[in-house]
Image 1 (tube, one colour):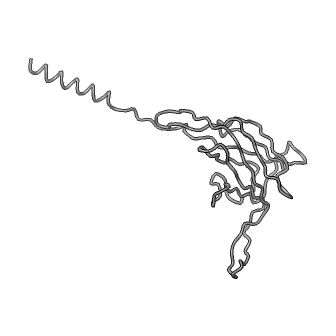
Image 2: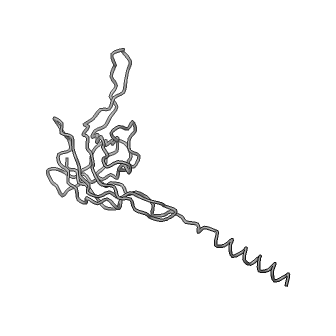
Image 3: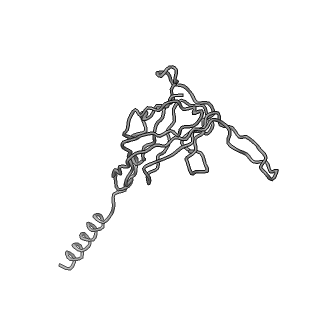
Amino acid sequence: MKKVKILSVFVLALISGFWACEKDDICIDGDTPLLVIRFYDIDNPTELKTVPSLRIIGVGQNTTVTTITDRSTLDSISIPLKVSEDTTGFYFIKNSSDVEEEDSEGNTVTLEGGDVDTLYFNYTRKDKFISRACGYIANFENLESDLEAEAENWIKDIEIISPLVENSTEAHVKIFH
């Protein structure tokens, strides 16, 4: 009888131990989607057109976005939107280069050269639960664009193809230049 009790306690402890273990989850699909932008020729709107030496810097940031190669010539890009705000702004710089100038004290400083346009994207964030391992991601709905008007914008027109950003595989925005 004593052996049965000991065996029962052992089996009960073993079963409890298995129930207490968590399943090892691996997050595969847990990335917030990037905004996909394609650049088109303003004179021939069905033709893709590369942007030479493109640099993109987030408004209020000191660094370039890391999802594209800086100062490369591209016809498509994927950039991140802020998940904690309903607006994200970017400086789109065509023909980006370093320009050295002297400041008022005679020191040489490096400034950004090229054609700079400021573009804001406005949206509604929608959190989506993926899994215990991944947690939540943000999708973006009601996407709109707002180009700051300047004397000579290199960006001539913007078309929102898909106001819902829930994947990074299809284009959401067309920029004509």
